[in-house]
Amino acid sequence: MQLPPLFNMPKSQLQCYGESVYCINEDYLTRCPRGKSSLERFTSVVAWSISTMRPAIFGLAPFDPILGETHHVSRGSLNVLLEQVSHHPPVSALHATDAKENIELIWWHNLVTSFHGTSVEAVINGKRQLKLLTFGEDYEMDSPNLVVRLLPTTGADWLGDVRIRCKDSDLEANLCYHKSQSFLGFGGNSRSVRGNIFHSKTSKTIYEIDGQWDRIVNLKDVHSGEVTVLYDAKKAISKLNTPVLEAPENLWPTESATVWREVSQAILNMDWEKASEAKRRIEEKERELQREWKSRGEVWVPKHFSVAHAKDNEWDCWPLEHSVPLAPIAVPP
Image (cartoon, rainbow, N blue to C red; front, side, top):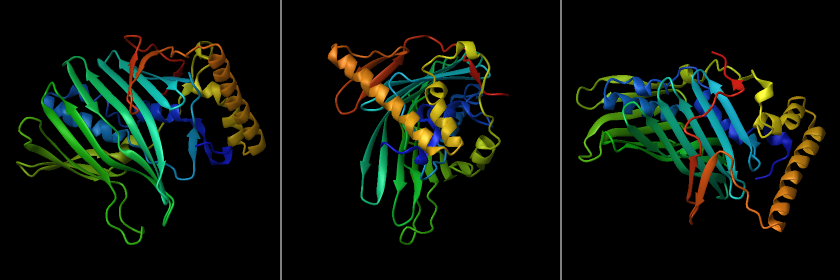
């Protein structure tokens, strides 16, 4: 959906995806490989998955990434790289590696939006794969949908079911992001999450999950009745540090911050005319390049990922390199 800069936040959607991985105060990701048992590691993966669901801001949307746009950031030993591998439909791919913790993360997202009269729903197709290489454990998970409510009250929420599975340990989790009962759209808690962790073969529940994903999510041991905190949003996403450019000479021209620099600065200065003109130039250049490729019978090929497109919005995106290099942009410790 094309929006005038007045309704844009000064960042690309690629940056928003990346931030959910590297922009964190309490590091839930590095807890995953430090678990002493497969169950402890699986529980940590569930907590990390919840940590990637950040509150959306109603009325403001990030820029739609242009084809080939990249975002490359490091946080400690974690290096994160994203690339926009398709523009129509919009598909984003992410690869992250941490050599110290022996972690690899591969994502791809294909957004399909639909209008429902009083709301807009973005179904996030794709896959999230987290590998704990030391233990040979692969975790696969999906994402809830983003629903923007227009009437009777406005807001943006994550809603829907998430399945997390590790075939190597025979453990699985189901999470339901939902909105509690309200009257005519008023009241109620729209940021609740409930679910359970269980053995895949027996379907026997080990833990129950309940709470608010933007506050506290609790974990209850069904055998002992003991309740512990699984996820604390305040600790996770408060006091976040802004990434800084440490090596300008290594910055790619496709970097999100470079592509959208002029538009972002104009938005921050509230110079809407300049922002509109700069955004128009970027979008027109994108359309011109695509016309040129089409006229020459060429197909654009991603630089960092191999891509396979099947029917029914099914995509497969895999990184071309074994690991992600250190980025010129870094999150301060």
